[in-house]
Image (cartoon, rainbow, N blue to C red; front, side, top):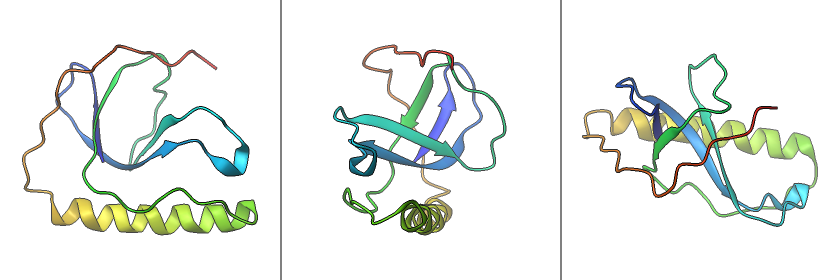
Length: 104
């Protein structure tokens, strides 16, 4: 996925998960994004996200270490896909609804 803060031109590559997080028993689907090479606080800010490629379905893992290992593999795969599509135009449609994350 690629993302940017609303109103800014700079885009960041990353990896996203949309689902219910079965290992943590979260019943409602949510979109979680991890931006590569970004260091900052995005809580309370609007992001525009473009999904580039589907990596895998939702899985349940035996333990946290197995989950972390898979997330690392997903990040590697996402970086490779983003590198292969770096010249592709990126378009960000307007968001369907403006939802801001509450501060933690």
